[in-house]
Image (tube, rainbow, N blue to C red):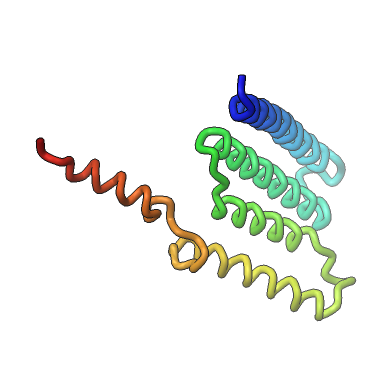
Length: 160
């Protein structure tokens, strides 16, 4: 067994372990979300949720979504051996959205709101540019020279 085979097997083992652990984390966070939701509903006053309870529940929902997105990005990496920047930016957007939902607005300064707004705007613009494929530092996978050559050979095979 050469070093390349060992490296690939080791990487595959680590990625599979990460997938397994991420699945456990997502399942446990979903179970905890269900527990918190049921607990908040059955405690007096029944079927009425306070604002802080709602914020906690919404934060947990976002946390489960973040876990699912991370799970998906690990799966894509395991299958294709690529890290999709779009998914990473989407996870960051979800994480910032979660933070916005659970923030205590009364104790924050206006500068903190400005910083948060700039961060959200930057992430949104980054996602928009990636989706539009106009980001100057990222070439879409189908437009790389090697792929274009391979694609042109498939589209117009040489006649013998």
